[in-house]
Length: 154
Image 1 (cartoon, rainbow, N blue to C red):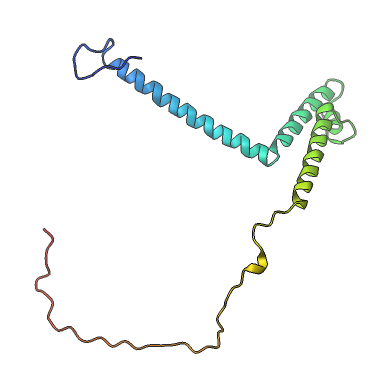
Image 2: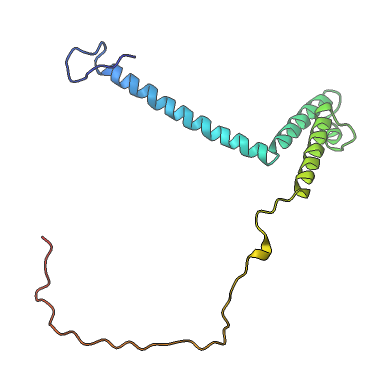
């Protein structure tokens, strides 16, 4: 959108409406970018703590419950879903993914990186039995009297 000088009358094709439209678009874009950034952070945190496996498992359970409820009652369908004897393809995929992730985490834990050599740090703590050094400070009385009335800020 072309910019114009709002101080000169007749310079804008739509008057003040184009200024408001341009402000609205940039403000809305900033709002959308901010909202998108927040959702990206939320998704990254969910994936980093393994929440994607929980989401996949929940979807699998819902699908299994719906599938089993077509042939039997809801109570029987839920029992078949959660008893562990009838896993679906997604349940097996989730189990394999969690095992692979746990194995890779175990390999990372075994390779510990030491950034500091702990023997190099020595701390000195003074003994509590040492006498405390005290000093008495004597100040001379004020030689001149304070100003009367106190000075005012101008």
